[in-house]
Length: 179
Image (cartoon, rainbow, N blue to C red; front, side):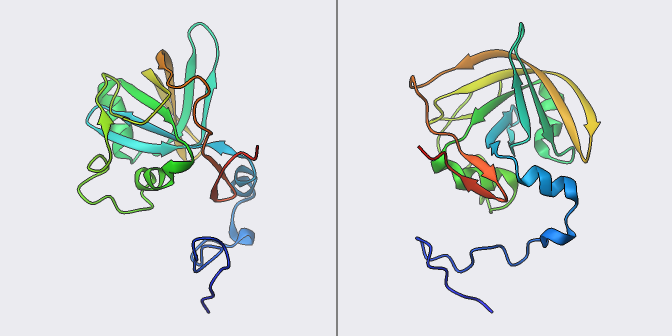
């Protein structure tokens, strides 16, 4: 039975009626869901892109980025061919963009058909992106049910000094930081 949720925006459901019940999920998936993760957009020349939240930035000389990506994605094929990609942290206004690149929302005309994009040698970057990193692909290897992509950070572009508040993913939903 459908019910109207009293949340702002008048959502019909407070939960996804098609989601796998917790008791049927693997314990590892349930643990991962309890860890807040940054929502980022990874793009490569081609163009191709993918929403990635299983990622880490490691400081060092050189700085590195690691991410778990779907080996069947167009992004994975494009980054293997181009040997470079861009990583853009997303903010609270980017939920639809994240859903499109995650394959959860339709993208009529293609992923890059809507919105403004800046072409870079690492791949397209959303024009409103304040911060992004240009990465050089180093290696890949199977890791769980994904491919671990390892890359060297070649450049970082910063927008405003403080930058936007990050978009987070926690327990299957987008979240914001409480101030």
